Length: 417
Image (cartoon, rainbow, N blue to C red; front, side, top):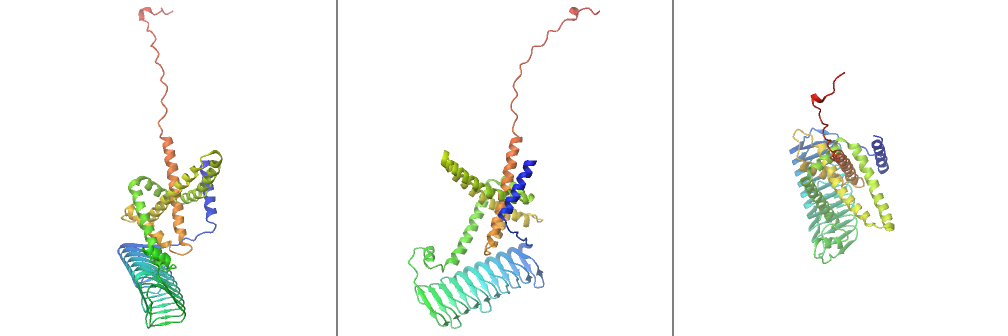
């Protein structure tokens, strides 16, 4: 018992060392189903997570909106930021924060006070729309008719600029047009093998850069001074999410019982899981370093690299466990519990979407990994203890049987006094 308490104290101390500053917990409202609707007269005073085939947010959300579905429409007022993904994404309401959206068709016709990061096949900032700060777009067909407060950075095939850009514009495309209604207050840097058609106003200089001859889109992006960085950033984000989902599916199909035990450990004992996760993150690299130094003296330095490789695999598995635990806590306790695969996909998508938030977004994935790592440690330790207690006892040494004593007949019994 004392050893267990000591381990918990050390784990809490390690966790406190990793998180030097406290992180405030935020409430959230989760809505899911075939159709998710926030009525015009409805007000949500928390962050909203909406997942469904058709998502329509017409009311007021005093917080962030994280939405995903085949069709996502946000016409109401959002006091925070918007993270949306779907086949069609329409943002026409006023947004106090920033907008990050990806889809086959993305349209923004509302006023966004922060930045906007948009990606898809066809992306448009309509004339009614406005972005208060910077606008970055990666798409095939790009149309910017609204106002951009600061800088514009877009990369696509066909680009049409008909709005006002308060700063500089950096554009890449095979066809670039500055419409008569377009005005760029700063400089225009374009990356194209054809000169742009400038019918509007460019207050600064116009500088052209020829696209390098590259055999692949990625090589062209690398040679265009980052003009396609936004597009490939979104592609890499989607590829990373899909890769994690596929790896999670392999784990759920290969070791479902072990995954369930680890997730249950996180859900039932969250704080010990976090503590042991912090302890493992702090201790394992230090142990590997010591093994490496000792190995240089006595041999076996390569064991440290094997330990670090296993440690890296454990971190990936822990991120899956943490995401699955998040999905279990949020939507897994509904009247109709979802399948673990859907819980995992939901958890990974939510964590990766939150991870888009600059500076602090990485913290969501890191904390989820710490919880999952602690769950793996608790489950592994319990499994080892169970094996010890259930080990069969050592076979007893056979004792030779003694020959029975000869029985005297009643006639031979001595006379009683």
